[in-house]
Image 1: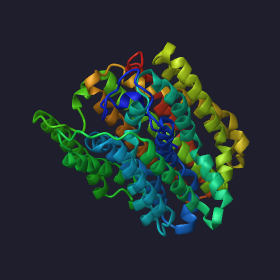
Image 2: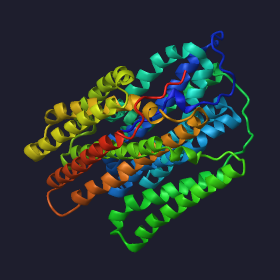
Image 3: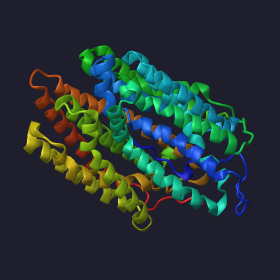
Length: 491
């Protein structure tokens, strides 16, 4: 399970004007639903695969590391691609790039559904992530074009709750699709379902989305994109593969190389900006303590929630042999709680500011403490109903953070820095999700693969991950005091 923390503030340059009080754009609601469908493709595929991983392994084989890669490869590719996705929309037109991204995403989804080995599935997931990175950053600029001025509130009244719900129901949808086994497709339908959704997004988008000429001045930093992607990949690869390889010296060398490559990326961005060319990231935003604290907050928060959710799913399926639908139902109260928390967080955030993050984190930590106590006391006799109450509490706390977090982190960013700062933040968020799979997934499998009873080992692994995730949540509470007190609001 993962979410994409996006905000209207994420796009400040448009391919056209933004005249307040302009006449309604013809077909704007059809255009909005095309954008919403494209966004749902990303949100569902970021989380829908998690509950299907053991079933996928049973069908096409693969190691435990390959399970981590099937989950992490999408978010890693998305993180790398987001650095350039928004810039492509500025240069070549947002409608064009959304349609290209959707077409590529559908093609990659078909390849996922036809995968015959872990390697082919991982490669197709990378393609999904890269095309998703082209598609997703166009959404908010297009909404501004379709609903100029005060009319944007109407669009967000539909769009916001829809993406919030989609973020949390991915695993449940996966369990239902696998259980249904439509046309004998088993797990493959979780990817095949993207074909009709993507077709609608492309047809409706071609008909209803506004076209505009792009601005290609400043160029595209292809070199920077490649360096950034290489640095992220070198960071995640040894964290996933290290356990299976026995942590040899070359694994540590790759990890060290990632630091060097990311340093080269920083130098390249500084030089490009000094030369008057458009960099992928305006590094000046990191001079603001509030923004840098926000980046650290996002990393800790997403490693915690992604790693915790994944380890719990592995416990239920690999350790306790739950079916995909059984695991989905056992974790369903988390989704219910997240939906409740998202609604509450959205309503309370304007009055409470960053305090809503502390409240949410406190509730989330209490939920994880409840899960840990259940695991310790019930043991391998664990039933889904044992987890219902603590996962509900966890979900409520987590949901309270989703809605206001992006705006709070951006609270003190100047207008001319918003585009770069939000793009970098979204990319770091996805990288943190990949790290959550890599780091906490490795913690789980370190314990699960030792000699002994698989159920007991899986239980011990889930307990360790839960403690680490709770510790990261507590760390996030401390980091939260360095964030801006109020969210940024762009009209």
